[in-house]
Amino acid sequence: MYYNAENGNAIKSGMANLFGKGKYADMEKENKRLKEELPKQKAALQRKYQQVLNAERDRQNQQLAEKDKQIGDLQGKLKGEVFRHQQDNQEKDRIIRQKDSIINDYRERLGHYLSTLSELLRGAVKAVIDYVQDGYRSFSYRQECDVRRYMNGQPDKDKAADEVLNASHPFLKAKECERVKGQLSYIARDMKEERQQSRNRGFHM
Image 1: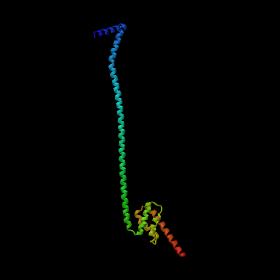
Image 2: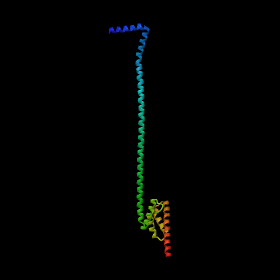
Image 3: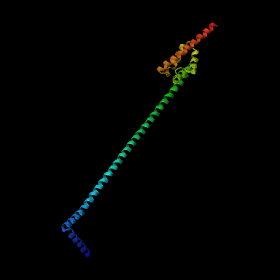
Image 4: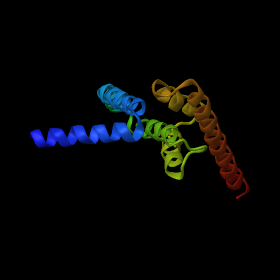
């Protein structure tokens, strides 16, 4: 160690002689300053690195929070849609049950009402109701036959048409009554013309 120390001192002494004592002292001073500055620069770099690291972590956390919020919003919308869909289905089921109840009640009342009528009038009323429910502009051949079958047994065709209309009235709306009345009047008029033509043919014979 003593030898190395001597060598070190000799080197320093040689450098001092080579560069001059002033320059050597400046170098020693700069070297000391750099040694003192190095930990500070290292600490500053660590702080800067930590700041960058924290900023990146905050940015990623913010992105994750935004994505979590978007997922939460979508889940909320989905739950709302599911709830509305369930409500709609429940309302549709309620309407269907209500309609079924009305239809069943209608059929029961119709059956009871028709049972109180004569067979021929019952067939005519049933034909009128079928005509209205089918939405035809005129009676079908079968429906007209059922109406005519009743009216054939009545001497006054206009009165017979009124009887069919009045018997059908409990199951018709105002507009439907007018339409049915027109159809029955047409059938009554046609039957009277047919009877008159038949009489004329009999007279000529």
